[in-house]
Image (cartoon, rainbow, N blue to C red; front, side, top):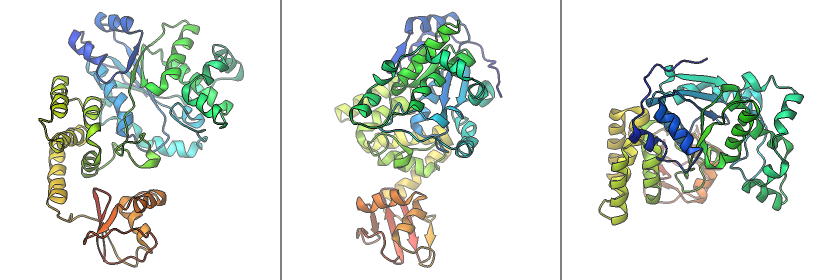
Length: 400
């Protein structure tokens, strides 16, 4: 399905300059792209997202926000859900081979992607596509013709692939296909611009190569830096260090407050749309020590929650955070389980956090669980004892 943009094109030089610089690590064909933006031509701006998990997290929202910037200038947004590329799996940022996903998993994961993207984009004004529409139709001859434009040495020269080969890890031929498919997406929708992370550079450039082969003008490319998860490690849904767009206002606010102070400035620039002159002032205040880190982080948490849930719920989330964490109050709506509902403390933690067994085990290893007396709970298999418990920095549960 798709929808056509109806807005007038804005050629405001200041807005275009910020579009090409805010949260941008590199621009390919920058001068040409800038000229197009200033010309008033409506550009087709592409972003592809593979439904490898049911939730879009805030790291993936960074390019979505950049799409919103293009949309606000009146350009045509083309959002591609990679229901076919997800089967193959992109290993651009992976240290090991990514398993093939079953079709039923992909179908389940992609169900709410458009709704989640709608928290940022005006869905009525975007062109929305699944890349299975064209990739499933390709035959061996066509794939061979596409592949003829690239060499194996080009692929294995990529940093993470070279590292895996050096370590003796397997690199499947399947993985070589992914850049071809992402590149052909650009041909299929005739993209003028593609947005992606710095880890995607080879795949993004593949689009330019294939567009030339098919007689199209090569797309411009905007690459955004990758942000760290809330624990400072690489953001990964499997590690649970993400802020999902589907998180409740309270969870979203608490997760922001749990991150390191050093991450705040980056999140202001990439994950909010606070004006850049204000962001510069915030960064200056942080470096000079004129602003208290907690106050700055609370502003960041408000901005992020307001972006996805509105200002009123952001304010409510902040008030709840202050009463719970600053005043030491136990939240009234904390989940409650009886001793007969949980067989051990690990199961209790899993139910409270709605996480996995492995995530719960990590919390025990990190000594991140304590009772109302402040005693650390380190045995995941101990029998449940009635009482109130704090799990990590922001979650609570009760056993009766």
